Image (cartoon, rainbow over all chains, first blue to last red; front, side, top):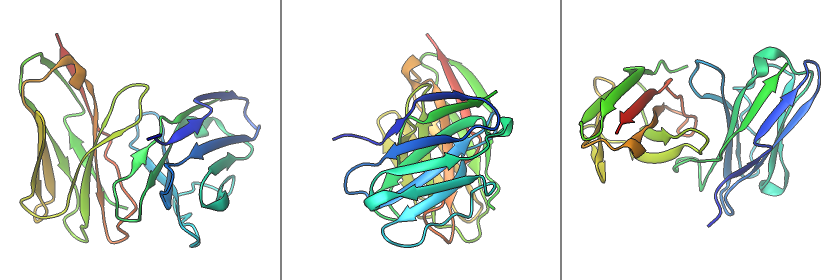
Length: 113
Length: 112
């Protein structure tokens, strides 16, 4: 079956612009996660959605970052007024439930000039 | 925040060599340990999920062991092949069960 997909695969933007990253999870997966990997760092947890529960936003680095998940499926991660330190690979993952194996998408490589 | 250490940071081996690397993590409040393989330009691929002390999992030429009391896991690759070249990531989950904390990974390069 189809895996997790993300778009765009690459994004170059200018400092101060807003960007929107999209994630399509595996059909039927109730849990969805966003992570990012900055240069030289490990994958960093950003946000977690589980069903209709309130998301765990504890990993979002600043209030410029927000995410939503519409209809329990597609999710968008929005970064407002991008900064150079936002440059990273943003990965989305989904799982059947909270304790299940997380399946990752190919990521969006964001470069802020 | 969990402190997850992976070593070595990078490793070059010849085709046919066997190799292993280490993941260290806090032993308190442990729930599960995940291993992933991440090839360039691809999605991270789940290899193993381990929960019990002394667990050993195997998938083809790759195996992993887990020691939850001392907080470490080893990943072994027997007879490395060029297609094994990737970054290998470990990620423990703690009390929350879903939030994975990743190490920086071990970059393995297998030379033909």
